Length: 572
Image 1 (cartoon, rainbow, N blue to C red):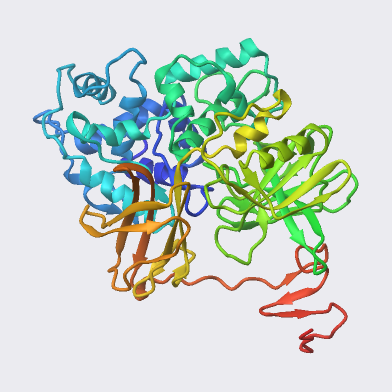
Image 2 (image 1 turned 180 degrees about the vertical axis):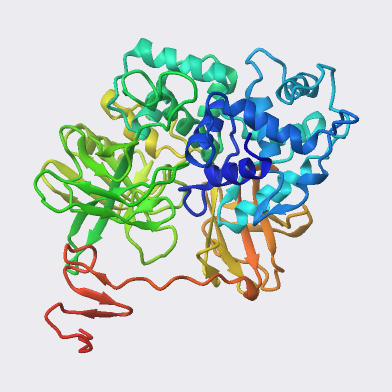
């Protein structure tokens, strides 16, 4: 049996591997996740039942053999830099995952499942030794751990009868019955293996799904939660029968065979012309050795080097629109099928979230209000649809460029929240759906002094906030990690609002309300200067294949011509 400490470390690593800074993390532990963790993140030989091994490890840590009571005291400590209660929290979520669609969501039904997970007597109510709220400090420690990595927690406290139960329910994404439903629906609709995650998400948005938990998740008002449901649905899609070899035949499941998905990265030459490059996404919840990708027309393979968490460096130049998906061989990991560049009818690019001087690319899975966009779409019906959207004052752009088969729109921005009266032509519904805002407001943070490694701001130099929305005024409150309200004010839409310089190191939550109803939120972290993390020196960037410097060599703030000898700076 693997020890509890091994499971604790592996689970924390699994859910944070490949996650981009600022993304929400869900501790959605289920049987398939446990099997993936056992195979890929643990140095143990599991012959048949990693789920049973995981449960035994948790029991060994928290169950008093003499009294049969639970004790959560062993989880108060950190194991290395990881909170000691992560694996135990996983067992709490596993119980929520096992709840059936028709089961009522209350403490009585939930704790019957939790007792079943830990193999305790099926008596109604909480187990002895786990009084109401006993698990909350473990959730708080997990959330603080994520924030220290520059990630956003999603586990949240509820109210009333679900005050503490909400933590577990907020993390359970697809239940087993939801997965079975999706597998059957994919087969019935004969989808085939050609869809990427964005295309599958749009397909799901058009399906009539009468399962309450699944439907609410896929259409949740919080775009981060809705995206997590869509990611989970895509993992089910990846494992379907048309993708051969994803799992071993029996016993312990093998590592999932996956493809590396790619988007677009825009490089801008000094004369303003756009060039687009393949922009691979780092697979989440996985780790791998050095990977290389090859093209049929090029002898040498190109290494896949990490740009930052969640992304590999941009590769070769690529036309944005292709007639069929392109697949390139990848070596270095037998469980990576290849790198796929999809066939798309449109692309939506956002600005680099970590620097205002960065490139536009497919950085984010969904857009938020106030974001400037570059939109690419095929000519014909899609370009006509963009014109209709502009005429109806739903979106606008500053300029556009016609490239014959496709059109490029610069400075795009969503102008309206009310898209209900717009009827899209059938082939362009996916475009309209991708541009439709899913929230009435958003909060943007800028300025201040920021430690980008931790996605945090330094004490004394907080960010400036700006609320984007379709009302003139909004109410905002700022609270500390313990819920203490330190600020309440009204702000005008799209106007900068300065936060107090004296904000102490802590995690803060900004809540935006309109007519006393919460419509948006944002979390940010202030850290003391002593907690600054060193940033490793970047390698010299030389663009032999031009990406944003038109073939010139970039060193620090200077642009050098490749023909100029090292040390001779050309300031022009």
